Image (cartoon, rainbow, N blue to C red; front, side, top):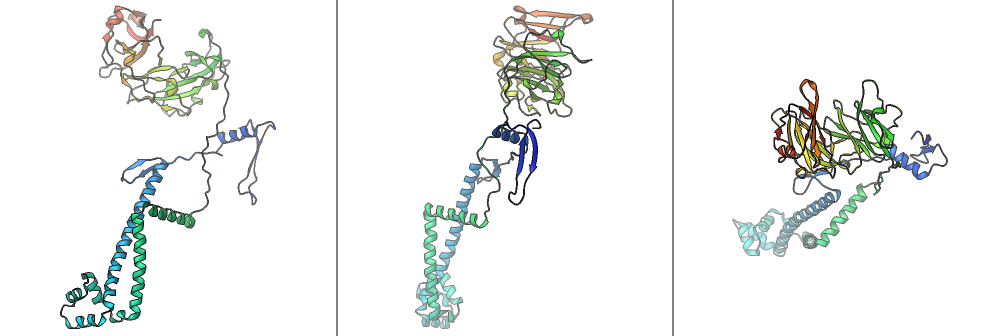
Length: 460
């Protein structure tokens, strides 16, 4: 931003509540590109996370999309209006029933008065004389005589007509879904006019502004030191012995790849961190420590590195004897904090990732007690989302897996130290390779040689 932005002014005032003026350093700066630069690298455009967990009509909390939430709310609204209508209809029917009883006796007031005065139990006689219900008879006995006057008769008839009209409308709502729908819509619109206000935030379908940085696709050699210093040197085929490092540091590994590829760093916490090759400095100096390019969690150590194209197939394994296959693109992440990819238990660590090529047919697993197991790569599971994986080799209690290495049909070379610390190598081919072959998740066989193995190298 500092390279493109000259000045910023706040011109907010009466004429404009919010007015910010950004001036680019160059007059030739494209307006759209400059706006995208501001949106991508400042807080002018932000995203607001929403936790859409709700208790639905089934009474169970779950996460739902906005459309499902609205559908549930509309269904709830229909149910609420329906229950309200039924409740009101019950009250109206009850009142109509009372008023119909009063209308029945208004024309025979003298007879009603006589029955009330002379009968010991007037209610049964009223019910028999005027064919009233128990509820109607009880109401007549409770009203005052002045309420039976002619004026009251007119009021009763008017109220009865009003209630019958209301009852017809309520029954229509319950019988006609279209009428119920019109009422619900009308109530929502009324509430919107009474309680609604103008939207303060613009919500629209739009992609997040991204500043595209064009990278020239060319071959480079990524140089990684043992202490995690990274740099890139143009072209391939460099002599690694010519590379220099800081005092006390040395070469971890070189990767011949391209500027459009990524470097992966695997932490002791099972997270994978990604650095674009194009972001690495040139090879004139010692490079930069990888920790300056990433946000590594405290207490986490970066143990292994790999660089290559997105479609590279990798074997990911842990010292607990679990592993799986995945593509580099599935591990890569744009977040500086990395991506949790390998599930580890306490005390377990990730092994160095190994590339699986079309030439590889088997997988060789070496334990720290010198046991070796070779089985087919077709028994490995591919997991794009990461996880623990399948058991590669059965380990004894307290034992760790040292190496998991894809190999071709020509066999594998086992390297290690012999008596006196002498470096030894054993080539396992043909019958020797068959002797340590088996099925996945088996214990394998201990190497008969006196070598203490530590490295597996496929024979090409």
